[in-house]
Image (cartoon, rainbow, N blue to C red; front, side):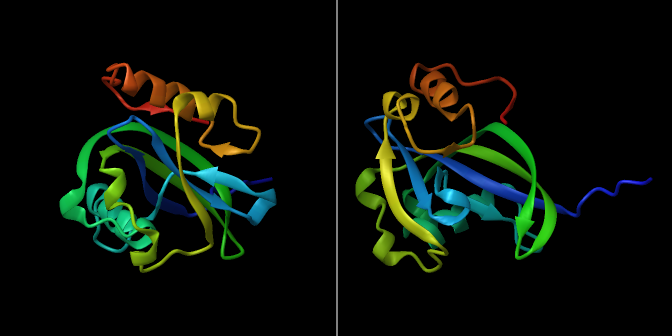
Length: 157
């Protein structure tokens, strides 16, 4: 029996922190409901940094000039359905700093299935009763807030 690997879908995601060191998460109702960082798949010819800035504009209405794009903090690989087709999504997570005032979901050009946008503290993440993706985000946010930026991207579940 042969097992084939699903087609690759590269994605860029942002760990968006404001001046109060809160992280922005988006709520989706699919798959029983969950919270996740902003981001999405790369478009043809796009690199991860460009995709991160585009996704922030599309999902949260943030002008790229207001974004301080930092280092890649983490990566994650997950097989899941996209449009009814199984893919292996490989996500790269980038540290992103913005002013909370620059987030304006009313300006979002492609809000997809986003139900809500909310700022969370590391403590909020640890105490969340809801599902939050990726697993390990609370530890990563806490490390960044404490000034412990990983030398190499950490692998998240």
